[in-house]
Length: 283
Image (cartoon, rainbow, N blue to C red; front, side):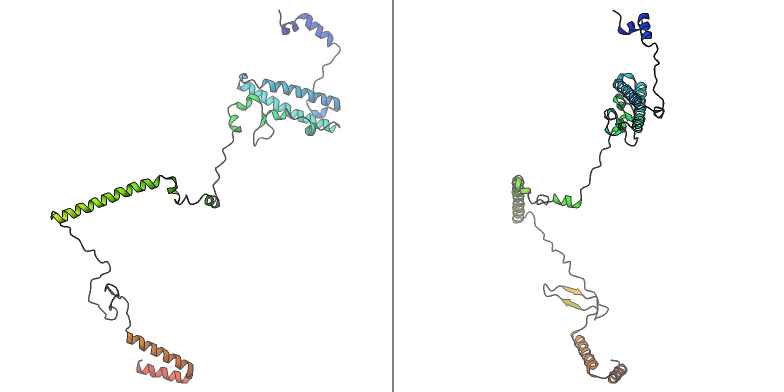
């Protein structure tokens, strides 16, 4: 049995088609939407474009067409989408409905738009083409760093080790090691005691060096090298600065007291005379 396509190519079928189309002129869609001045025809051409887009979107779903065919189909779909937009603008100018606002957008949402390349969309198998798949892959978001306040919320007693003994594991281990350390210390003490009593080994105890003691040297100046003994242990040290004696301190206090009394009760003339007298006497 012949196929439908072969039946359509027979001479009888072509003759019958010619009779039906006799006297009819097939109208072509205008190249520019602005060339159409009738609203019904503008809507007709818009429906025709939508029909062509639907057919091509169905074809591009087949990934076995090949890379070049898929790219060509995707370009044609985007071209028809732009042309449909022009006809919608023309329909609005002629007083028709605003399809850009109230019309269905299913065809526009069939494809994905590449970020940064507004208007061009990829449909069906075109999304998996080499170089296109990478465009839709989102970069992983960088890990957010916690602030100091957020970090401090996680700091509790367990952070400082106050709850290490609550698990019941640490205390038995510590007791075991403590017992072992005590046994080793006792064994060492017994060994040393036995060796000391038997005379096999004489323990020599070295005196610890006193870090506070200093070697006595001949002082260059009696006042700057005066030695003092501490209250505890009789530790001696050397003064590296001149230290006044008790008598010198008392004389300095008396002079200071005299100066205060002179400044409070004596006149300026008397103070000047007193200063001259001290200067002459070398006091």
